[in-house]
Length: 80
Image (cartoon, rainbow, N blue to C red; front, side, top):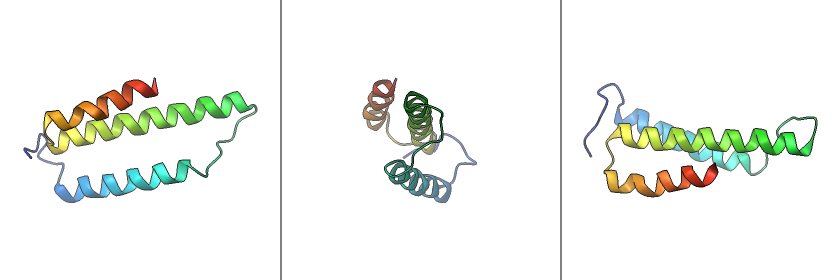
């Protein structure tokens, strides 16, 4: 793994991954506040999109191999 950002430490990356997993678990039980069910789905979808993009960005920045980013990118595209 070749770090692409000198200020992004291994500890920071591990902390990010842990918090990402916690946020993903939280999504399973959380209902977002909205006036309509469609509004809730829109808010949920946008939250998932941002979470997925952040994981891709953090994984790249941490220096993971480019090949390991392909499934993350495909997952991001699916979210849109």
